[in-house]
Length: 107
Length: 121
Image (cartoon, rainbow over all chains, first blue to last red; front, side, top):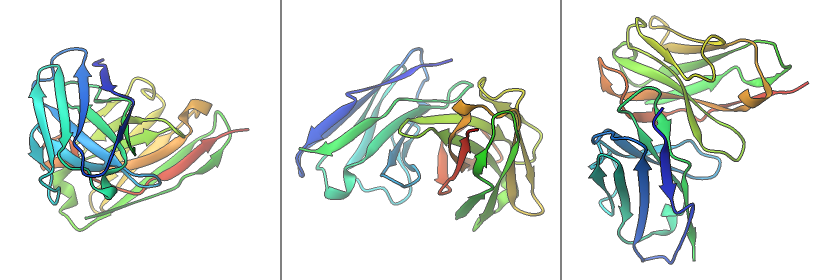
């Protein structure tokens, strides 16, 4: 099973600032990596798939990068609606696995 | 696209429960479907996947042999039969749709709102 490790666990950021979230895989997943956003009481929402590609309707301030075992989600200028929990997921091998999440909170 | 889960509730350990997920707004029989769960205050855990035609099913190790995923393409519905339930199965169960048609094992592009399953005596 591929272990996905996200860091930091909590990220405190001021509105308008840049946020950088990391995700590390225990073995290579190529670029088969997705990012999801989840707000309290809501279902997860797909942000990024294939490491780089924004899902339909996702603003350009969200971007993904990386390959192999190291991945990054960058939010270029945090808006109030971006404060949430973010999960990475690998879909390179079964079982599909998620990271433990990063909470982006208001500083 | 809409996914609507149902069937959750409180169940005693060792008992069974069947979840349903009714889909609309897309061509259901061309997409793989997933169940993903989230224990209270915890992260996401993939549970099971079924291919668009039902011929391929895969399970997380934690539910293998106890849970069964199935689908009825005539009713645009996917199911999760959960047997021998345990306390650590307590979670919100989400159904989700695959990103791509005629394939499986990719990202999950749409999610339902989830249904809560509580296993407790």
